[in-house]
Image 1 (tube, rainbow, N blue to C red):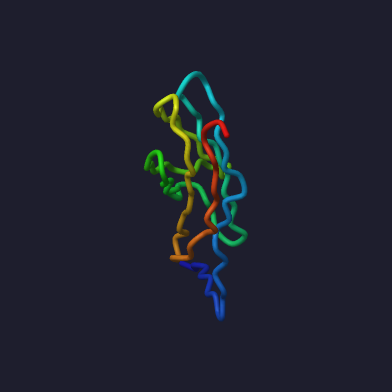
Image 2 (cartoon, rainbow, N blue to C red; image 1 turned 90 degrees about the vertical axis):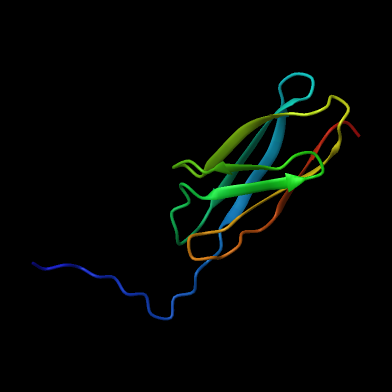
Length: 104
């Protein structure tokens, strides 16, 4: 039986890139956190996005289109920054994206 094998020689792994990361308010204290991640040399489906900051900590998975979304409920008066980062299957860390929740 013939089997194809791919060998990467001197391959440089590119890190994933979180290209979108923003909140959409859906009522008092309820937010959808929405984002997208890309990776030029790897499939991003199933990557885990770590979201952390001043208001909450959450982890979510990326779908087959590179998108992620989840809902959080926080205090109506809460304001603060949240950050997102991921890691590809080869260990390369993505950029850190920042968002602000609350009225200025």
